[in-house]
Length: 120
Image 1: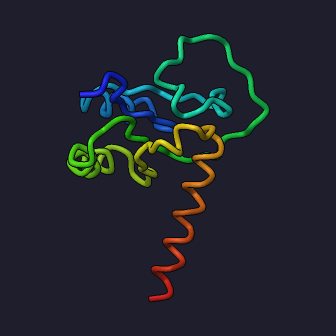
Image 2: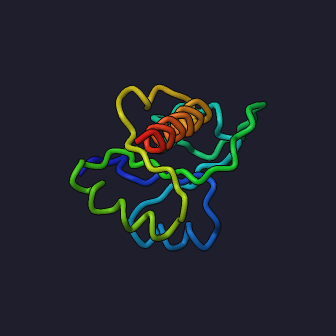
């Protein structure tokens, strides 16, 4: 098991966060972390952050350092807790991205997928 295995959760309600914590370690990602690199969030020590980036009003859960099999098992559980949530696995590339960039990228991917589904 990897030492930084956790769920990174953004935009969830207090009730959803509580339910998510029953699944394992969860780090609540705050809007002021918008410019923080995804790979640094599990190491965040609480120092004060400021940002001029405005985070979108989205629910996002990122699987950080999970094995593929673990993600498959948890996806349905997370979707049952937080309706409309965007789910993603943190990759070596996305660890280098800021939270703001990644969330916007995931939103774009979701729209592309929806548009492709409409075209079928």
